[in-house]
Image 1: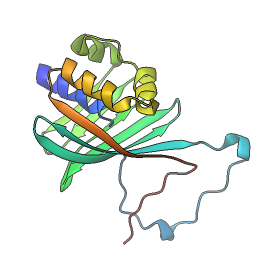
Image 2: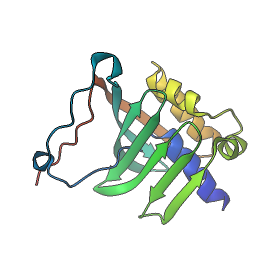
Image 3: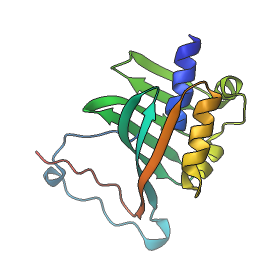
Image 4: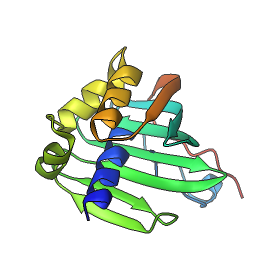
Amino acid sequence: MRSRTILCAVGAALLALSGCRTLRDPGTSPPPPEAPAAAKRSYTVISFTGTVEGISVNGQVRLAQDSVIWGNASKIIEVGRAMATPDSVWVRSAVLGINESTDYQRLQRHAGRAVTFDWLQETLLSDNAEERLNTLARSLGYNATIRITRREQVDRLTFPFTK
C-alpha cells in the first residue's frame, strides 16, 4: 500500500509522466472553432528524459495553466501516465499494475513536504525544475535523474499521430 502511494507521488512529481494519447485520425473531424483571443488557453509542453531506480524513460508533460497537468513516460511501451488537477492526482501504469487516485494531503504525508497543484505547476515552469524534481524523488526514497530536453508554449495541443 505504501509503495503504491509513493509511486503515485513520484508519478505526480514526474508529471515530468504525460498526456493521454489518441489513435483517432485528426483529419476525420473538423477542427474546433477558434476561440476569441481573450479566451484562448495557452499550454506548456515539456519533454524530458529520466532515470528512476536504473530504469530510463522518455516522456512529456502537458500543462494547462491553473487547470490540469497531464504526463506520460515510456520505454519502448508506455510505462505510466498521470494527471493532476487542483484537487487530486491520478496515476496509471498497466505495466506495474497501478491505477491509483489520491489527494494532495496524502502525498504530503509521504513526501514529508508541501506538495500541491500550485507547487507542481510552479516547479514544472521554473528554471530549476530538474533540480526540484530530483530532490522530491530523493525525499521519497528514489534515486532519480530527470533532464528536461525541450519546453515550449503552444496555443493548442496537437497529437502527432496519423492512421
